[in-house]
Length: 372
Image (cartoon, rainbow, N blue to C red; front, side, top):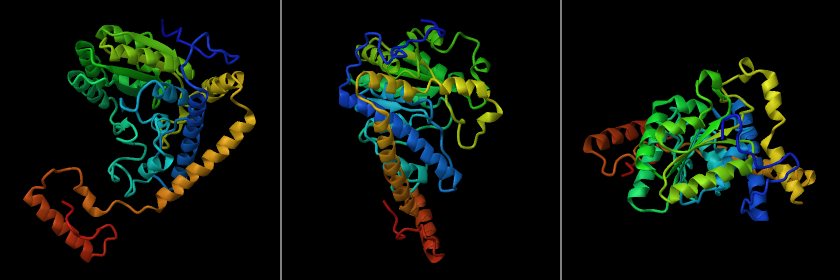
């Protein structure tokens, strides 16, 4: 299947080409609810950033089907090494909007204790969602390492590694693909080809016929799918996961989609993305496409969407208010999760710092007691 002929499942009338997704009506509704939740969470974070309440966010509009389709094909016991445009993978598997908002504010309840940028989520429960990494492609060799470890331990575990088209130009991508191919590691590479690596278009990123074809050089299958078709993504990831679990090695999936916003809230896409291109892709909205399928199955009405959006806006707005009300991480957390046994010189320096902060009235000095 060439890059010009991506796998499609959902037809314009909502039909599915005979594909059986294996999802109950409740699971289909959950997919839909999660897609809407991603969009509402995304819009809320943009407003929070523009109003100065958080410092940064990453737009997800237009990528929802790729995220949810992939997430629906893996188990909670599998590992996800996400990109920073994967809000939906966490939400699909049960991470609450409040838990994610704690990271957006970098507060004391944040799993990273405020050490990461906003949008750089990490969770071990209810899913193994490894901390997002800003440097492009650095998480890909780590994903292969985790997959290789699972293979050596004979665990029935696979790794899903998600990244953008720009990530394919990183050293990490090529190292990861090479080792995964040699080791037949149980990893699924998901390239979200959303058209732009910040302001660099795809044609400026590679001279090959898309990105899936790059798999051939590393001895693995490459598949191109319509990334705005939730079932096409689910089907391709399902097949790649089954292949990985069977010991047949990795797969590279190129999901062709489009980000409707900027690279981040620091970016102005109108300076480089043609308006006609945005309009073309807006007509292919992945949520509207999935609605067509649900409508054909008698599971959706416009009234239900309005009610669900209202519910999600209330939930996510409340999550933002609750997260903002949580104080910053206390000062002693700079030593948490760093040392198993703190060296004596670090302990002395730390206690001196705590004492100074306490005398100066630093609101973040905690109780002034060394934590370990």
